[in-house]
Length: 203
Image (cartoon, rainbow, N blue to C red; front, side, top):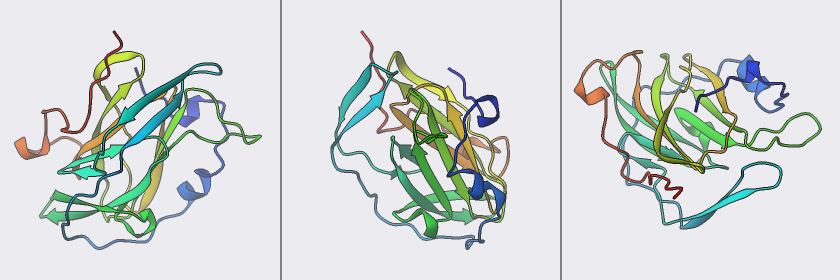
């Protein structure tokens, strides 16, 4: 299923517009690594439409595992990056997204009148780095088997942007963080499935 940009939707997203209007403060180019941080076990609840819901129990899942960032509905956190030359070589979880090199918020967007449309999700990304940021994305969906590819727009240096999907997403994984649009070598193009991403089975 494809990704839909906000410009194609008749939605008024109040919290995203001010963020897009202003450059963000610059972050240092390098960051040190730390041990993985896991979420506690939790129950994910999604609205499929105005009448139906989806529910799934998850064991502890890390926010960051190697070069993979794991996102679920309601998440708001960030990562610091380790940079070597022209490559991003490491990611470290940061609880406060305002203090991170890259911040993520994954929610159902609020629209005019304070309501949220069924089966619509938004990813907001802050990029405090000094270079444009590219990444790949995978997702699992409540009503589709397996792990599915999706798209996330590049984020300009020192800016923020957002992507929207007109369907509920069980799990979103961002990976292959890089400064070039195309991966430059085997280390920049991970093809193995994320370790903590569980394919959805609808049968």
